[in-house]
Length: 184
Image 1 (cartoon, rainbow, N blue to C red):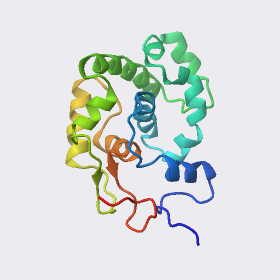
Image 2 (cartoon, one colour):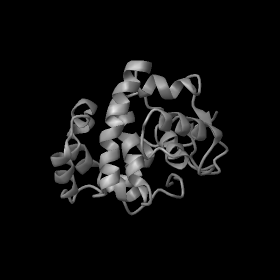
Image 3 (cartoon, rainbow, N blue to C red):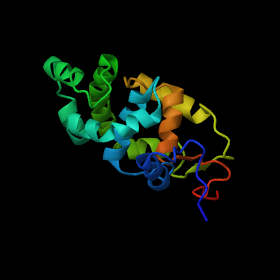
Image 4 (cartoon, rainbow, N blue to C red):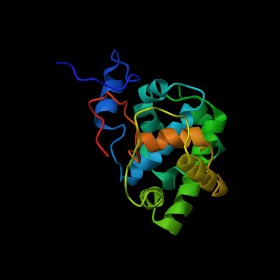
């Protein structure tokens, strides 16, 4: 019998199915992945997640394996080189936001210990389980978005942050009939 997945998981894309089955909604405490996902969710603005997911490996190469220390040092020449990289989304504002976010992340890391400590303190280390009815934002995503913006992060609106919280397992938002949904 075939397992039931969330309705958004494109059955024609094995990469998307693997993302749904192994990553989306799984509590994440890995700093590198948390930084990567924050920037990939921002890159998604105005696009489909599938578009970004299909370019994920190219992003890893283009952005030095998501090494924030290296990204924070990118200059105008590196921005121009990234603008020529057909493997990523060539949007100057999004590229520049990633560089700015790396700098903000390094500051956040000094202040809070990193994204893991920062994010999970909002929920006292617990995953929030929803009723499986998707929404675009929540009071939590509103609060985190506002705080990240205050810290200088870019492309961190409430809708982007809600998707980020879902992707990193801070919010468990699998469809009600999804076999990957875990009980509260």
